[in-house]
Length: 463
Image (cartoon, rainbow, N blue to C red; front, side):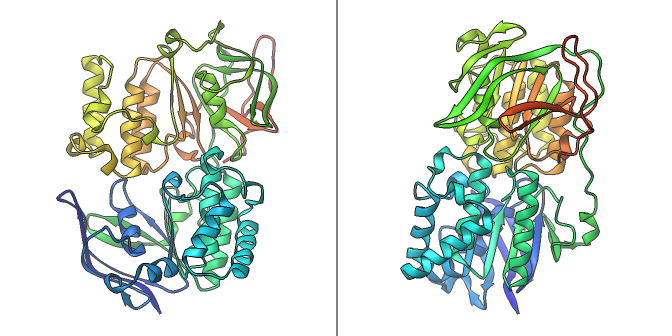
């Protein structure tokens, strides 16, 4: 049975054609990975299938044999469940428990069944410890897990997921992909957007690419290139960048980092760890936006919350929209800074390569999540700072964009500490790999030699 049929579907936004005469059919009980360049229209397509009432389109969309335009809001919500690319746009209530109850009450589900569905969804997604925490206090990865729990509780026959694992650690990613495979086996129809094709091999039924030429089914061999990233290099000359001296960080009553002595080194450092472990919080502490006990030093000089520090160091936050201060990309790229001609030329070069030149005078908030991330990264890496802290910089980016930004970072005479769950772009480019686990920081990888502190760890097995 065909659960979703696209018949000559076209969609435009602000007089710009996003989707052009799409024809495709998604069978019941299939698991599809939808891929395509950043800004190609993947998110828009999922929203059209979900039945978002404010989106006008040409052509026909049949969902479970019903024309999309004739379906009621309740029918749309009970037939199709969707996880957004940006989890911050997903929630109405303050906690996971309240969010699930609210969603199911709107589907007219009885209270007894709501309790059963809530428990099952929380158990399946491993979110028991998050059920009553304030959603605003969760990490990006934890918010994505919470979004999945709500989706499973709704128990819709069609599940749409837009970059659901962008901020999720590798072990959880594998577990959740396996869970989606089980739901497919139970008859669910799953369409999932992802730029990262790792861990899907043997789990999905088809990979479909969206481009200006339409939707094209790929061979499953595209999923077979799943190599372990190499995130550290052998080096005998190590200079301290940021040093933690008896630093302790807490989130409420929960201790994230015990009293720690540790030095991040010059170069490109990849910082990994499980969701909620405290990676983003540590970066915020480094830029003195999060309270901590102990002392931090940048090049052996005490770090304090003052203007001089921010002339040396800055942080690109996980959600690009939280960084923007202007309305258009053009204004954002030059806001409050004097850029050299060389940097201006580099910006134009990147904008052309990333197909963003025609977006410069439009609204930042009309861009796709991937395009927002591109503008954020161009603006931040353009800054004349000695140290850049990047929190999940590859979220929503296609492979080409990841390579463009990675090449630029290697050209720059800057130091980088990068938090990322998407490690393929960093493989072979990262100088140091630091793992945040068990409330401590440790180097992983090749032998690292310092005058006073020798490290000898096994080759990286984290991905």
